[in-house]
Length: 367
Image (cartoon, rainbow, N blue to C red):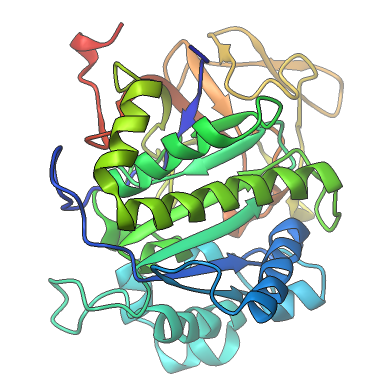
């Protein structure tokens, strides 16, 4: 059996348990350009939009559309204009902005617009979910890190974890699929654009430079996206059949995954090993990533292993502050040079994940 890595951003929410199928997905929106200089998602979205004009309704059971999330940042080939758009969608951020902030922050305004177009995320009583216009959002991203094709799904949502398993099953071997679990206590607190919808699914592909199109990365993204859409179509019509196919492919139901470590810094969405910034430029690091870990995403490091190099060429070892051993993700990710995106290297723990229940296997039961 193939060994698959899961990188799953977790959002705890109430979803059907094993044996109970979720309601059919009736509306899906594919998003490109949440970060304006991630060109792959924009290209794939535009190609899909062209196909939708030509074929009208390629999927029988759900409505499909596309949107460019941050068109102004994309036009300027920037990750964002004022702040990272993919950090603007927690319930608090959507509900508590004042007019002066909206006037001066392009991403804050765009987040409000997207929440109206695709959501709303939550109802005005602040306790229960509204009835959003979109059942499932598929957000397309790229990374400068060597992470292959990474599927980002929500803990507690069997529909999206089954979708991820289906993508793994259907994609070519050379399209290395990975999947990350992010530590948010609930979907309301998730700041990502995809969290507007009840079912949130992201595809992150790399490595590719910012503001660059690579044919192979576009193909890998398109393959993963097409498999996801095929899953939705089949699961809407014959969920039992799809469940059985997945059980045959993954008989234990347990798959290796990576769970992001809780943040140690206020306002950060997940834990990162930070580097100091240049005093003259907060977006320029004073340390660089050590060559021994470059391109080694998902690998483990231990206390004392080389991690950074300073301006004098001195090696800065890992100090064990996040535990030991730990796994590193998004190593030297270009987007994480920006303070508003959260600087540094993401920290994760290797765990096991049950795709049918969308829950982590208890530590004492892991292999």
